[in-house]
Image (cartoon, rainbow, N blue to C red; front, side, top):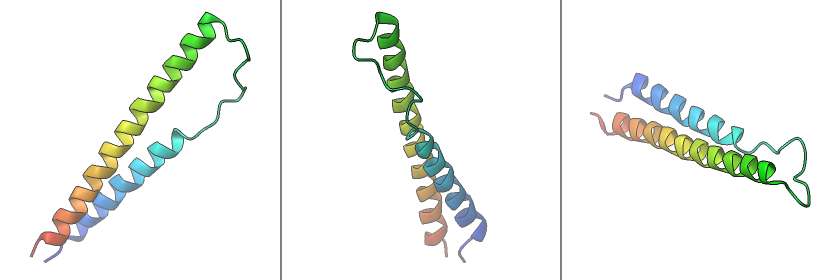
Length: 76
């Protein structure tokens, strides 16, 4: 018997992963200056690192959701 609870949890995790990934697609409010200062370069590097971590977390979360759905569909 397929467990609807595991399927629902899996879909919830997939949705959370998609939402987290969508947060990384935001554009900065101001465009980067042509000649950024050292401080601005550090801020841009920190933002890029944060986006990378958020995308990794989104992938892991969505992957866990897919694993739950596959597990639920393989139950008999």
